[in-house]
Amino acid sequence: MSSDQAQQLDALLLLRAAIYLKKNPLLTKTSSPSKPEDVTDDIVEATHLEFNHNGHQTAALDAPTRFEISDKPINLRSIYFAFLNKDTNISDYIAAVTSSSQRLTAQSKAPLVQLPFAAKLDLNTWLDQSSDDSDYIKPLEADEQARQTAAAIGAAAGVPSVQTVGTAPATKEIDPRLREIYKGERKMGDRNSVLHGIKHTDFSRVYKYAEEHVKRSKSKQQAGSQVRAVANGPSGTPAVLASRNKPTRRVEPIIMVSPSASSLLRLSNIKSFLDEGMFMPPEMGSTEANRLQIQRSLPKIDPSRPMRFILVDSPEMFKPDYWSRVAAVFTTGQTWQFKSYKWQSPPDLFSHALGIYVGWRGDTVPSVVQGWGRGVLKVEIDKYQGPAQNRWRDREEVERVWSAIQDSMISKGMNRDGALTGNR
Image 1 (tube, helix red, strand yellow):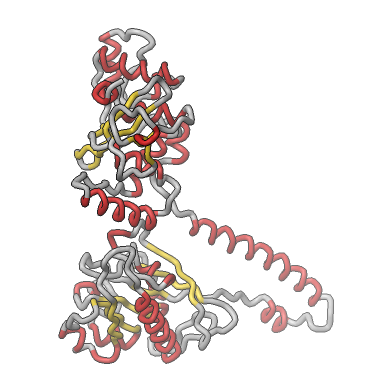
Image 2 (cartoon, helix red, strand yellow; image 1 turned 60 degrees about the horizontal axis):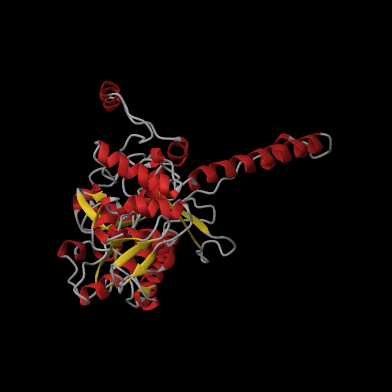
C-alpha cells in the first residue's frame, strides 16, 4: 500500500494497532522498501514508517498527524520518537530531541517537536491502550467513510473499533437522532483515566505524614510502657515523668524562592540546583508544586544527620511562627517580592535571613542589590548553552550557597533541632 493510502487510514491508528499487536513498525529510507538496505534504525536518516500488521503500509515521517499542541499538528517523526523514549526521563528526552533536531536541520528536514511532559504521557497512555481518550488528538470526521476507515484498521489489527478517538463504533449504523443525543453528552473517563489521569502527582508529602504518624504511634506506646514502669518504681515522680514524656520535634528551616518570571532560580529548577549542583533553565523543570523539600548535611550544626529544608515561593500559607524558621531568601533585586513578607524593608529582612542573588557570570550586579550590603550573597553561574555543556562550576557555587546558609543560621542561633533563637 502506498504512503498516501496509509495516510488515509490514519498513521496514529496504524501505530496504535501495531503497538497493540507488538509488531513495531520499521523505519525506512523510501516509501516502497524492497531490500534490506532500505531499512534503518536511525530515525534521522529514515523518511517513512512501514507497518506490517495488516499488509505493508507506509506513512511519511514528516506528515502531520491528528495529535495537536496549541492547534499545531505534530508530525509522525516526533510522535514515534516520543514513543521510543516513553521510559526516558525528561532531561535525557530533551537532550535526545535537541541532538536529533540538529542532525535533521543539517539534512534540511523538519526538526523534532519536543512534547511537554503531560502531552508525552497522554500520547503514550493512548498508544498502549491504557486510555481510550486523549486531550491532544483531534477526532476523526464522523461521517461513514471515516468510521469505516477506523473500523478497518481496528478490525484488521485485532483492535476493537471502539478504541478509536472521536469516532463511533463502525460495527453498526447509529440512528441520526441518537447521534445528536450523543453529541450533547459529556465524556467520562474510563477506569484507567480516572485512576491514573495524565498528570504526574507527587505523593511524597503524604508518605512523610504517614511516616510521622507511625513514628508518633510507636513513641506513644513506648512512652506508655515507660510511664507504667517508672510509676511503679522509686523514680516515678512527676518531674521524671514529664522529662521522659517531653515531645521533641525537629523544626524544618524555610528557604524563600523568588516568584519572579525573570529569576534564574524558581521552584521548577531550584531543587536540581541545590541538591544536584547543576543549573537548568526554569522552563525545563517539570514540577508544578508550590512547596518542595530538600535535605542537606550541615556538619557545623548537626554532624550526625541531614537537615530537611522547606522551599516555597510565597508566604501565603505561613503561620506567624514560620517567620522564625526562614533561613534564606533568593531575590532578583525586585522589592515587590517582599510586599507580603513580615519584614518588607530589605535591610530589615536581610538582618533576619540571608539574602541570595543569582546572576549570570560576567553580568553586572544590580545597584539596588549592591546597596543591600553584606546581608546578600552574590552568586554567579555560567550562561546555559544546552544539556551537553560542562557545568562543573555550578557545584562550586552551590557549596558557597550552603556554606553561607549554614554560617548565617549559626549566627542567628540555629541548633541541631532546627530552632532559630536569634534576633527574631
